[in-house]
Length: 304
Image (cartoon, rainbow, N blue to C red; front, side, top):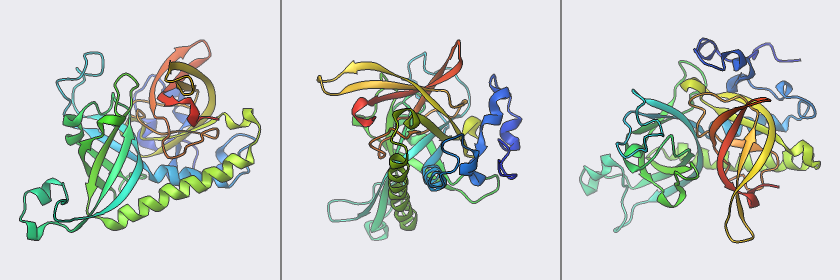
């Protein structure tokens, strides 16, 4: 029986004009999510509550206020206004200034050495490359944390630098950094990342059968609204590129509902081996069986 508090999407999302509007009832508010919403054989496993809430705390809303002129024409280059997407915090590291290394944020750069913050933290965020294309767009992006309910106190981080080694338009993956002086926030995020890992280990052990591991959970900001959870089944894993005979790049497809601004959201599957670096939502295609979503490209070694 579904909890009375969570019968579907919040009112803001329910009112959005969308080609998938008749499927919006498959979104559930993160704030009041319960394992009892899940289908069998998962709905009796309370570990999903901690897993989904931990994953949700790491999901951010990304707002790009100005797109780069270098964007390829086919990648939303002509879209007007701000561009919303989702992303996942994958790394949080506390830093301390030294003689040769100082906080690189714009506030500290533009002040005297005496007034610069001695301690800061670097936050790494993973999303899709069609959401954040290059470093110019990183600096025009704002990441909103804790946007779980309308009117709640949220936190905003400005994009600082692109991780070029982990960014590829070909594979639709992008990683960038933000800087914060909120050390308590950074410590909390570290704890949440490890909480996600512990919760996943418990869930992974609970379902030894391969067919039971093909369950997918997505936490995103559909249409830029508050965080919602959707779930479904892994439909396929398609090979994209053979790297060295041992590792193959693959793309996942799944039937969990996604909408505009779900781009870049983490795609959790029970079969995932490396919880640190989840694939991100990339796109969706219409097939005979309905709308099927696709991830960006990941190593097959990360999957069971």
